[in-house]
Image (cartoon, rainbow, N blue to C red; front, side):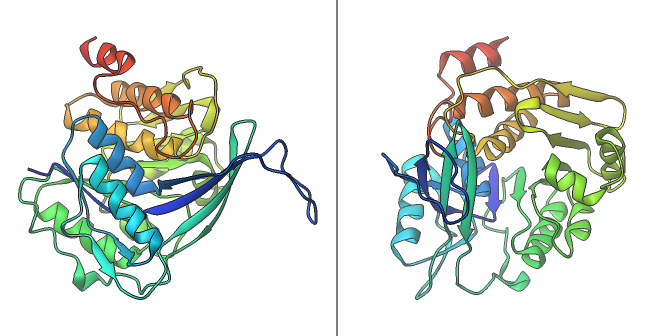
Length: 297
């Protein structure tokens, strides 16, 4: 009874806390290195799984060490991998992340395997799914997935952070657009955030949200603009903060919450994740006191 299907990036992260970010040709002595799983879609699915939602991943990995680690992590977290593609003989996606004063700088290498083609997408194994969550990495396949989801009456959500060819065609098939401020300003560099929200709403989405890091997030549902402050926590690592935001927001959609409540819950979960290292290191569970209190309020 999978409720959320995810298609997009899953990776392994090498995360190094650094006392400072070096200048070019510089050097830094590191004390620790964490090896953890991450990736926008993978982290959103793990967030939902920890909150008690049945999820499945239909993206791809290879059969290398990184790919095996990604699959093992999904299974440990309760994410269905029965329809995950394992493409033999290539390299799965991985990243090196430097974390200084809680803020992260990401160097990433995409998987070397061929992109999944649009004709390979099949959502029929998930007859009860309610949400499809996408990124923009494999744009043609994502567009096909969104089309199939729309025909099945599913809600389509997206976590996009790059201005890739075809992104506007994909936006036309998305019900919940949540993007970072960096991408929003690339789309409309001469406009303010509120104007960009209204421009994005013209694609037809129910909700449009722009995340602004430590300044919180701002959303528009066609009637009102909502500002949500970031929760104040002792930040250790912001890796995965936006990905967790997406997963928690989808949880709110499944529960029938309005945009304001979805944004507040997403901000809470995102902040809690920032208290530990790794994209998935601090993702809360449904039984955690802060989460239980919010859901019951």
